[in-house]
Amino acid sequence: MTMINNNYKKIINSKKKVNFFNKLKNYVYVYCKVDTKNNNKKTPIYIGVGKGLRCLSHLKELNKKTDTKSKLLKELDEKNLLTLDILAHGLDKDQVLTVESACIDLIGIENLENKQKGHGNNVKRIPIDELYNQINKEYVNVLPEHSGVAILINRDYRAHFDELQTFEITRGVWRKSQKTIAENINAKLAYAVHNGVVKEVYEIHKWVPAGTQQYFTRDVNERFIKNLPGKEKYFEFVGRKASDKIRERYKGKIVNRIRSYGNSFVKI
Image (cartoon, rainbow, N blue to C red; front, side, top):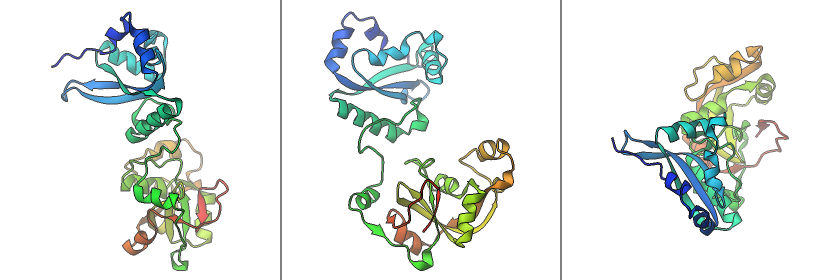
């Protein structure tokens, strides 16, 4: 096994550290976990921005801290499996936030100890065709025979989701009042919509009580069934992807629809 040296330790003990960090100006940094069993692969665990000694502040008084990030840093530091890298430096205030946000979005905040996604402007991982439609404001009208319900998945969707993950956050779990919206318009199609863009289109075969079907990428039972009274009040739909013809017309595009007013279900 190759010995790993915590590359920040010599910096901490250096008499020139203040001068060194001042020369960096605004910078983006990343703490990584080193996997000695996998060719010393470094996996990011926390990304931040700072000036001066900011990046080293996370390592102070770790024995007194109880948050999960500090506990992980302490554990890796003691095992000599923690490294610190500078991703970018010499940046202005706007640039540093943009770089931080882009890095967090690429890796996925769920894979990091970060609490927030970052504050950079125009930084959001998005397929280029979807961005094209957004920038050029190219909308598509839903044909009468394709009417259905738009299910807004802004809260749960992530850019790295595969087809199954996207399907599972769209088909459930929904309150009875939301299911009623779909039933009242006899919706046969469900449009998974994220930030106005159709990510996928599904056929709705029927609605069933929440937890009837198996979930493979979500802990639905724990979050929605066990901890919430009256599971019959929560529902999910049974369905599948719509035909290729329908999906080709709407997927990746912005569809004209009424305002949601905070509701996750909108007639479309």
